[in-house]
Image (cartoon, rainbow, N blue to C red; front, side):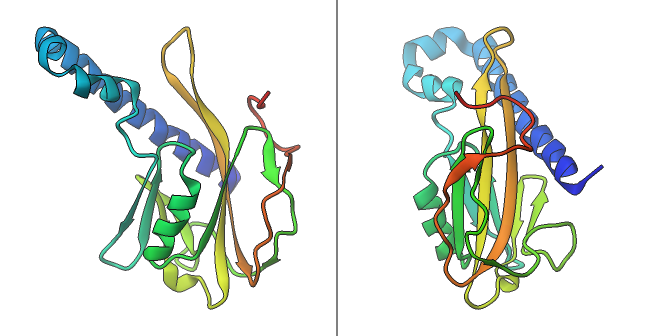
Length: 191
């Protein structure tokens, strides 16, 4: 099994775990106090049930100097880049619809951006993506391209997440992300 396939499987499992925890919380709220929710907590319950109370992402600096990133929704990319920069990570983040990728040639690629080894600048871990700012060289930018979407299916009322992460280290200027068709995409394609 290729590393990218394993990575995708791990990410899908993490997203499904989060969705299941959210469903359990919703069931407990309904079973334990439906009358109380209706009477006094409608303003709190609506964001919890719809998911709008969760921030789009979380950036946390860990004691060992690495930075953990958790993506919950594909939005607020400019703020995410600013928050990563404040945490010591020079990053360029792009969110793309299913079936798309950034056009190749955004800059000079150098260094190991992602992988399982200790020499990789970014690693997928349970709970998100760990980035080691010390492995991003002087004048380099960590380029993260998230491709995919989240969709609630009408039949099951469950969220399906189909997405892929591509990472690279670019030395010097990073060109803009120009979306093009991705011939390797397997899954739904944006309309």
